[in-house]
Length: 106
Image 1 (tube, helix red, strand yellow):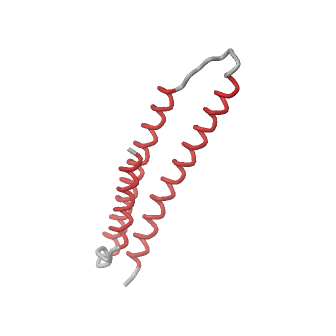
Image 2 (cartoon, rainbow, N blue to C red):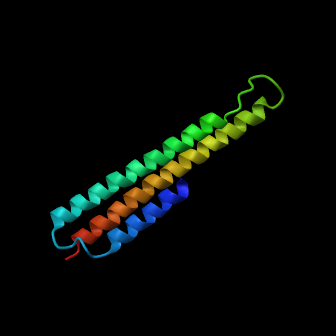
Image 3 (tube, one colour):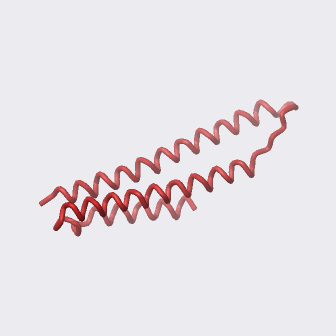
């Protein structure tokens, strides 16, 4: 699912980079905002899927010799997920800024 979303973000970046919205600045900006909203929805869906996968794959053994190692591993997965969420958010914002910049061009 992550690759599919990454491909969608790439297509969004390419679409915004093309000079097709430059005629009407208000319409262009609204289109960029709608694209950003769609990008955020897709990013949220990917995050939800990842979160559900982490929950379903969680092994909880609160006692035993592997508890500390398992908790470290789980914390690392949570940190990696947060980093991916940040990257997806930045991709959406970057695409929006690029699109809005194209709108501002004469």
